[in-house]
Length: 136
Image 1 (cartoon, rainbow, N blue to C red):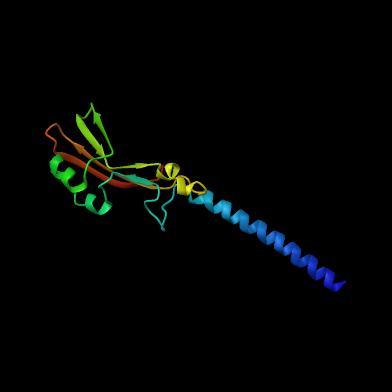
Image 2 (cartoon, one colour; image 1 turned 180 degrees about the horizontal axis):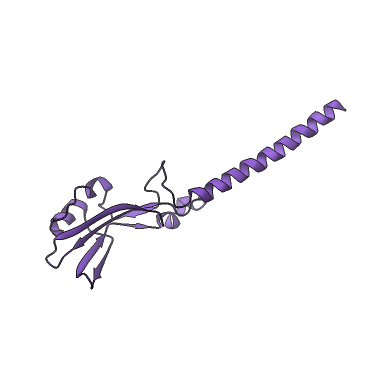
């Protein structure tokens, strides 16, 4: 009888332990959503072909658009702000994990991403340089 109790307790602890482990795993996935990924910080950041965060750190206000392009290449996207009369060039964007086929089973499909943008005036001079983490 004593041996049977030990087997039942062992099986019960195995079931409860497995349940707690699964619960912690899924809870961790929800908590980490939109947080900074320590292992692969740029995992959810899609970047322009010649862009690197290190090169973008060299971009400064006052640079001409041709200097910026020579340094970090062509932007991914462009827009025009009619209110401020500024042209925006975007070198990164969100949502890279969703489009990656090798990450289909990833629990974290949307984490923090790194944004890099340069705004130019009508003379093609950089007036605003943005680089920051987005947690959206």
